[in-house]
Length: 613
Image (cartoon, rainbow, N blue to C red; front, side, top):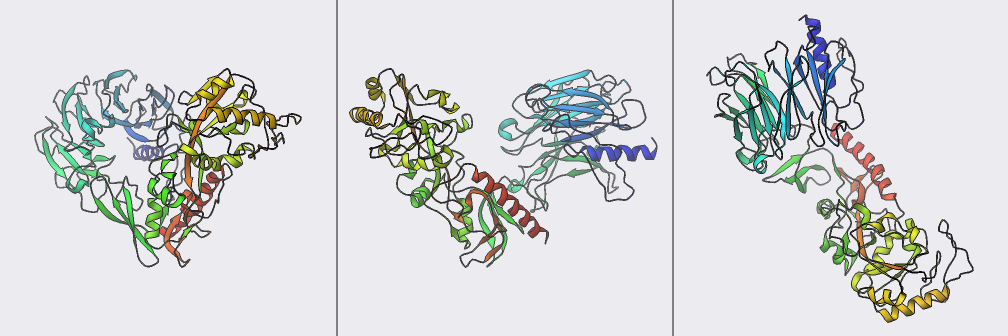
């Protein structure tokens, strides 16, 4: 093939390896963008992987395959792979997975599997590997192994069983409690020739696989597989296996600075040092200037006014990590029952948490341990009315539907059978975040929202879910005795007094603060007051659902954290719910999202500049 064709194919492959790339510019003055390729739909993951597969369309230029593992063309996360002409960028074929296959998570060009003179290609997903003919794209074999992330990585293995068909190596890193597993498949029919398990739970063997040179000189190409959770101190390792039968030949271990040695990537490098033995490329994406960690930060490494890094506790080890800029964006302390009681007050240990169980205040604690200034309404929080029997923390399957926010058109009664709050004081957006606290202060930390049929049509969708504590009755007397934990006699008196106090001469209008109110009660309702007299009557039991806490750390307008002398702690930034001083006593709906977006952008920009400088 002419040299210029080789260069063209190489440039195309580089372009397509960037997810959903629409434009590229090269620093080299003689580099040329030949064409760009685009995803079919946003979120397809187009360009997640790309691989040269050889010339399948007969134009003497190598062609290539690109994965889009989150494509929904064949169902949710079905995935798709695209075969393109290397010379023109024309689409030659698409391979579409089934729902949740994530086909296109891995791709490779293993050679001519069916020996018809045209190179073939292999597409992997999570649980499925398909080999296809390069000549006409029919399926040569389709192997499915559920539950192991089988197909997370695929590679050309060479002919390991000496049948003159090139074979395929497949990684399944989630097998056997994430010890991981490597499969050697026959290129002839997809049959399993041999397998190897990872050395320990969590090793993740198979996150990267590749065929390599014949390192043991037995006339068969050997194989390498990565296990980023293996090796001494679990820094990761790569294992070299005999291609013939999978016998372990060598373990490759990193230096102590490694983080996830072998994660996602190993590849045959050829004989780069010309010693007669093939060499191997092994990735460690965590051991770079840009790091991503699945670890728990425990403290900062700091000088008097400068952050130097983090001390982190991983699944199996602790270590110190150096950074020039760190952004705290890990929430308040709403999931820490001890801190809730300490700062919000007695009874807050009994509150439900609307969201994650992980917002325990660790980021705030770490900052204050090195002198950060506390700021804001530490005894305040965002808390709403929440399904009484909801779980302790949020349930992703239900989401926000445990909230009960149609109370402005109802009345609220507590265990004594009495009303205790002005349900119609203002629009929902201006009262919902403070009324959870009011409910928590009631006997037993619960209340019942009471509706009749005049306003049922105004109920939000969250009143229609199955996970709900609800009672219904056709008479007010029967209804009173169905309200669990409520003094029925006092409740009936409350209803009678309330009905008599409603200003029925004022028109009801749910779209404005209508002034339809009660008069003469100990706790009046200011708007949207309707008599409770049209059956069937409905009651919904609620308690307090805590969203986030208001207390946090003090920051500058550049989102830099201040110490107790109001001097910046250089290199430490904060955004989101752990920033104090933004909310006091109440909260207007949606403002927390605005705060997170604004200060998140400011903090990220400032931290990036700190790292650069």
